[in-house]
Length: 92
Image (cartoon, rainbow, N blue to C red; front, side, top):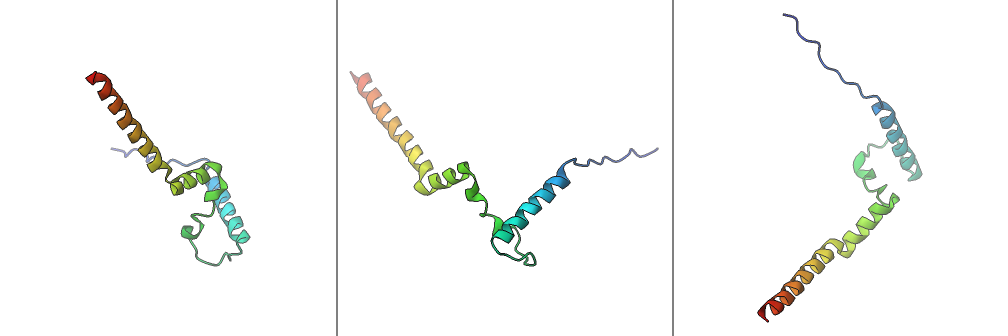
């Protein structure tokens, strides 16, 4: 019996995207004065573009200000107050 033909999927835009991202990385390295010959890797570039977007900056600021813990704390306090008020109204 003949074997079925193998499946091969080629992405249409993957090469252009990779080239564009590589160009952005090289431009960022050049702006920071780094040489292209260095073997830096992605660890050096990881936080470079973090402050470029508004939502990422806000998330970082909230995390530093304790935004998640503070919001959960407010919810817990409101629940305790509502339960206390409910208990007082039920006991009457």
